[in-house]
Amino acid sequence: MIKFVEFVGVAIGSIGVVFLLVICGAFFGGVSGWIVGLFFTETILGTLSAVGISGVTMWQLGVTLGFVSGFFKSVKQSD
Image (cartoon, rainbow, N blue to C red):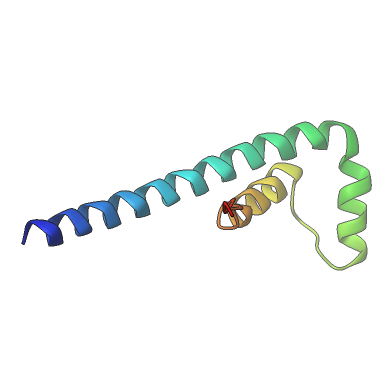
């Protein structure tokens, strides 16, 4: 029974860490998108408009990309 409780605790903790990393990725993506938008707004949003994506701001694009990339963290495996 104790092993099961430990397993559940580790599982819940792992899910919490993944959730926290994804939220942090979204936050930093939004900040990065805002900073990049200060310099390249017309270029990036113009390119997105050309392919049919309109009505987004740079920070929204950054949050979206940060959120999605939060699920794709690289893992280094040792030999």
